[in-house]
Image (cartoon, rainbow, N blue to C red):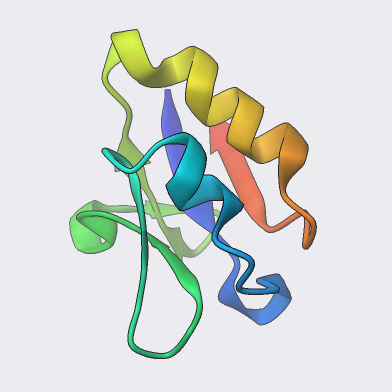
Length: 74
């Protein structure tokens, strides 16, 4: 599974970082970022592979995201 964030829609509430700090972090710009985000592209956006043991919590972060800016794919 891969995850990426569309920063244009991030509300900066940091819920994703609270749920899964191993994958998400807040940047100096006040927006959420996926750690290691420059690792590849998914739909033209930086995407990062998610360790299997974190997939469930990343999906929870996607579901809880107020800006609906977290996306997962295979």
